[in-house]
Image (cartoon, rainbow, N blue to C red; front, top):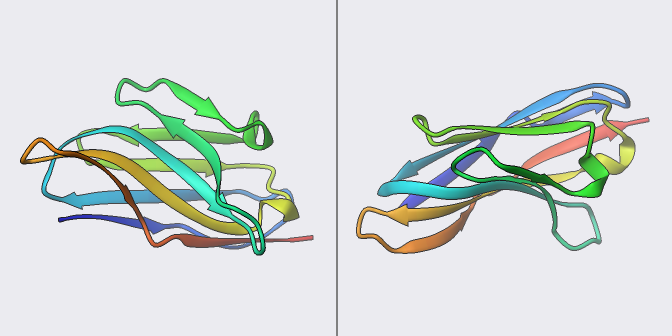
Length: 120
């Protein structure tokens, strides 16, 4: 019913930048919080950043000052600008959205992830 598709991952050298994008589509009435999570090999999935519909943001400590989350409510998109990347940022990055569907149910949806690899 609802699909989230991430893009923008890739290989980058330490100190470089990447911009991730996530597009939500399907039977969407509105979207509450949208966020980015990541999962490194052998580790649990962790929060990167979250943004409310009105634009309030919250960042995990590891990304503060380097990452910026933003969204386009009209396009049902969320972005993550990542600067000053470090090898420890290497992970699969997942988009998450709290979607109010067109039958007024609220559910959490996940994308399939996009791989970010930061070389030293």
